[in-house]
Length: 516
Image 1 (tube, one colour):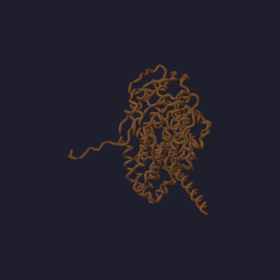
Image 2 (cartoon, rainbow, N blue to C red; image 1 turned 30 degrees about the vertical axis):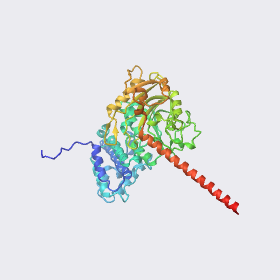
Image 3 (cartoon, rainbow, N blue to C red; image 1 turned 180 degrees about the vertical axis):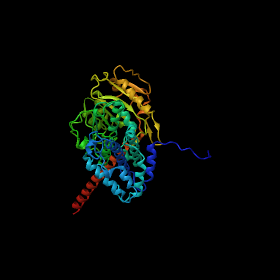
Image 4 (cartoon, rainbow, N blue to C red; image 1 turned 90 degrees about the vertical axis):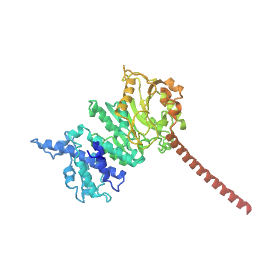
C-alpha cells in the first residue's frame, strides 16, 4: 500500500447522505434547506412503500394497482403518478424540476386530506439551484427507505433523526427548539414504558417523543394500535415537521394540534387526562404569559412565577395525568433547588403531595440548544395503585452526570448501555419483587422525611453522597438568572428615570408659575 494513503472508513449511511446533501446547499441557510431535504426524504419513503405495494397488486389477477382503495385496505400510502420517485428522477435534469416537485407535493395533499397545508412547497424558489435539486434527487435515488427491508432496519428513522439533529446543530439555539436528542427521548420512554394507553406531549416539537413511544411498543412485541398520541405545538413550521415525521411512519397524527398561543394560553386538551406524559418544555421560559393566568385552575400546588415557567409546566403536566398516570419531563436542573420566586414552596407542596417518583441528574452538553444543566422529573399520580410496589413515601434519586460520551467538543450523548443502566435502576426500584440496591455515588432511595431534612431540595448529590457545592452550583444557569435580573433592573431604572424626569418637569413648571 502506498505511503500516506489512508484507508477510507465505512461511514454510516445517514452521515454519508448528510455530507452529500450539505455540499449541495450553497447559499441557502439551514432553516430553509431543512424543509427541502426533509421533504425529499418524505417523498422517497412514501414512493418506495407505494412501489412495493404496486408490484404486489400488479401480480394479482383482479387487483388494480392504480386504485387508491387497494392501498387504504392495508394502511399503505397511495402516491399519484406525478409524485412517484421514478417520475421525479426522470425530470431531475430539467430546469423546471422545482415546479415539478412542488406539484408533486400538491398532488399528495389532494389525495391525503390529513396532510393538507403540511408538505413543503419550496422547490421552485429562485435561490434553489435546479442543478443542486436534481443532484439531491439523484443522491437519494439509491436509498431504499420505504421498502420492507428498509422498514425492518428503520433506515428512515436513522436518516430522518440524524438529519433533524444536524439541522438543529446548524441552526444553533433556534433550531434546537424543535429537536430533543434521540438518546434522551429513548431514556424517557424506556423509563416510562408506555405499552398501552394515551401518550401526551403538550410541547411536542418535531414529534420525537411519539415516534420513540411507538418504537418501544413494537420492540416489545406489542401492538402499535395499543397506544394513541396527543400533542400540541405553537410553532407552525415545527408542527408541520411533526406531522410529516409521523405521517411517513404511518402514525395517526389527527390529535396533534397547532395554535400560535401555546399550551398555557390555549390548551387544546383542557378537559383531557392521559396515561403518559413525555415532554421537553423550554428551559426557564420567562415569556410564557403567566401574568394573564393568575387564577388558572391548573395551579393546584401554588401560583407559578411569571418570570419562570418551570413550575407552571410541572403543574400543567400533573393536571393532565389521569388517576394512575405517569410523566417524564426534561427540566432545567435549577428546578431541583431554586429558592427564587417561591419555587421552594411549590417544590415542597408537590413533594408532600407524593407526586415525585424519581429524579435523574443528567450529564452536561446533551442538548443542542442550551448549555444549561438538565434533569429528568418523573411524576406519578398514584404510587400505591397495585401496578407497582407501594412507594408513596419514597423518591428515587439517580446521578448520571458521569455517564455518556463526547460526540464532538460541544455535545455529549448517552450510550445504549447508559440508557439501560438508568432505566433498569428505576424499574428495579419500582417493580414488585425486584432487587434494588442503593449504590453510593449513583442512586439512592430516599424517604419524604429525608427530603424534608434537606428543605425539599431535590438535587441527587444531597442524597447519594456528593459534595453540595459540586452538585448545586450551575454556572451556566446562574448566568441566565443574572441576565434576567439585569433586564429587570434596567426596566426598573428606566421607569425610575421617567418618574424623576416627570417630577423634575413639574418642579420647573411650579417655579415658573411662582416667578410670574
